[in-house]
Image (cartoon, rainbow, N blue to C red; front, side, top):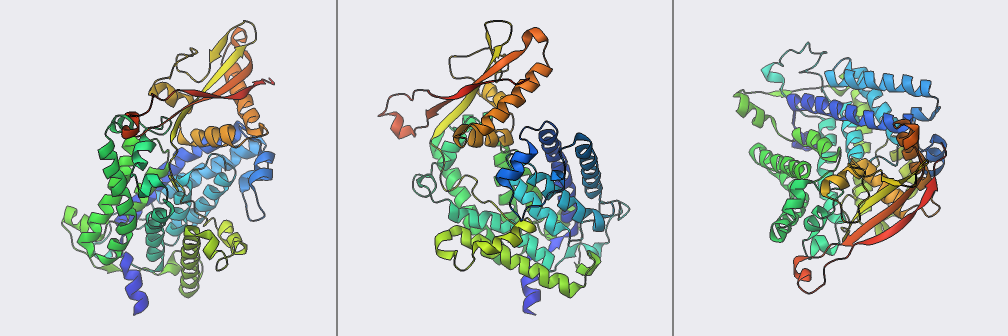
Length: 480
């Protein structure tokens, strides 16, 4: 009885689960294109990735060889699995394989993953145990589901629901900086960072009071949203779910966060209870009883016990993350290997614990081989600028958030020996020289990082205008 009451907290709609499946597949297909590009072009050599980032608990089929033919076969299989999952074809078999290949390609690209990668793994994992193919799928013959089969409630719906709400609830406790808790300036600072702010976000950053309100809204929703979702009845759940969706729509409009808001939107859609879709379609429904053994090869009891253990593991890991020093003795690092093996590890540190007070951008200059001139590889017009570039020019330097993470975090600030800088330079040299005539070939690349401090409106009245500073990242010769 207690078990049924707990699982009933997350009674999901199979139409929403099918929509989630389709969205996950489409977004993962886009991610696959980028990750495959990184592997094929060897931006970071495979042996370096294995040496610097792999532990004994990491497994990736993409690391069996760096041969292009092997990569081609693996990517082709991965693409076929992604399309099969998206279309809902043989999902009982394709879903576990799709999850395995998704984990594998993320493992092989650790420098280019982001918070969205964690969300993708978790949603795909739990979808293995859910009826994601009962409607809008090849498995169902694209037939409309019977009216009495719209709702589903079991341990898997509890697991995926808890995981989605945990994204927000535990993120609140990690946001401890003054920008979040005292000044409420986190959104203001974030929207002033040109690499991640969109044109709409840059315009919005002019209104400090409004950005403070958005900061407070974000914190309140992260803390209270999950609690209220569990307490409220279906109509109240609709409001909370729509607020979560609104939050990520705001991310999409104001920031460049690559796949993170898309994956979160796919997850938040299933939080909308059946009442929401029934109201739109003016239908009624009763509970659909799904046996988890139908979704997997083991008995239902075994699957239930395993999934309960996974839910408890994930919750304990999240709780430990709030205050690692105090809780490490109750959840020691030795247990992490189980989470790494199933890729249940999660990163909640996006925009936490604080926000950078600096806005920066790179200037990447190429030195020609045959003429005493330089070309700006990071500018749309390829002119060398001596002033702050426009937002569009800054976005052209690193076109996606994955590139921003790699170049800003690893190349600029965490590369004391210049190893990642050198690999990045060789990649740029190769790309430029292969796409230009010999007389336009470059022999070396010079990198600089320009940055300026972001000041609050009240500070602007008492301080001189911020000056642009420069960090020289070195000049490296092209090997090809």
